[in-house]
Structures are given as C-alpha cells and as structure tokens.
Image 1 (cartoon, rainbow, N blue to C red):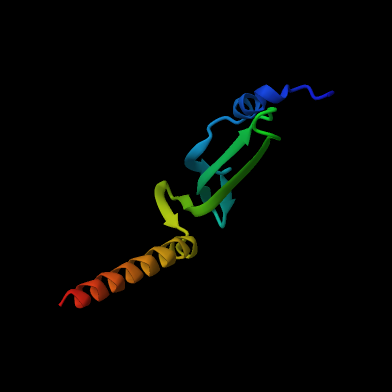
Image 2 (cartoon, rainbow, N blue to C red):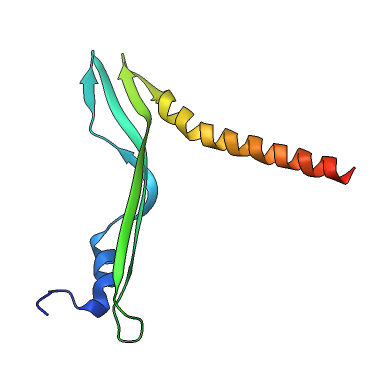
Length: 116
C-alpha cells in the first residue's frame, strides 16, 4: 500500500491534525458596519472517530461531524462595548428545549393521575 500513514496509526494521525477539539467559542474577524466595530461570536462543537483496520475486527473506518451556531456579536460604538445576541439562533435553540420540557411535564401529570 502506498499510503503515508500506516493503518495502525490512523487514529493518532487524525488526533494530531486537529487542534482545540471539542466545544468552545469561536470569535470571527472584526468588521466595521455603519460606523460600529462588530466582532461575531459563535458556539462551535465538533468531533471525530476512527477505528484501525485489523484482521480480527475487519476493515477500519471513520467519521466526523460538527456544528457552529452564531450566538451574536460584540459591538463597540462610541467606546461602549455591548453584546448583541442573535435572537433567531437563540430562539431556535430554545424551541426544542421548551418542547421537551412540555412533553416531560405532561408525562409526569399523566403518571400522577394514574396513581390516584
């Protein structure tokens, strides 16, 4: 095989090539919009997995995935720093949480009514 990475070290090679893996905040490049300095901020999470090939376990494989959610931006105007949230992104995060909470409450109420 002509690959430069041996199969037994693919997981280590992938891990070495990815720095700051996990969950964190990402800060974009500053821009000036209508005389206001804007610095975008996003929540970023990603991960990957791989399995080495071997005669016992069969072929190897791998996969990766990630997400970036724009949280808002820091805005500097007239020397005052303010965080401007991205209300659409925040609402899109809250909708499934509120729906799950509502479902859990309804299940609790049904279970309590059955005990009576």
